[in-house]
Length: 264
Ligand SMILES: [Zn+2]
Image (cartoon, rainbow, N blue to C red):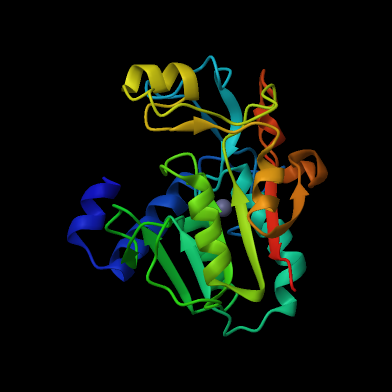
């Protein structure tokens, strides 16, 4: 449905239709127990997540309860990001330049709701993005973006350090890069192997058919080596009402990384 809408409808009409659909879906979750910091709406619970056949329930530990916002489809990482932005955005100019790597409606909607209009979305394939390009090498000028969001993208690119260095290049000196990646906290170092190429093997080794790696506990250090100062916000450090309920693995940690440039 969404792919069809992206191909045939202009952006404003697509979003109008999606808002109606989401508002109807939200009515199925009455109550105020949980809060979506992206759209500002409260519900009795979030929508449950059931891993699809393209995801490994060995890595990701089966079903999770109360994960996605029924209105804007935010996941925990998006709500943590908006929770942090809510605390820090008042200090940013409404004209600041925002780059979203991957079109995520929940956060994009948050920016527009707050009055930030200078938002550019990029993606390698998604026709809903404003610009189709590879985050490993973009056409944007040095220091041209004040906020960059990049959630669950780095596991898909062939060289994630190249992508980090590119975001470092295009981010302004006082800018913020918001990052999250799928992580197995049992791994001390990030696990990748360019020889693992079949969907079946990637599912087994990396947890999803189209993932090229699974990040480990060294991710923060790897980001720092690309020139950033990194603040980590863990899922356990945000209000309980914005967190999901997840069985099993520590994926529930939902670490979100807020990165600034080291100024020389
Ligand atoms: Zn929401």
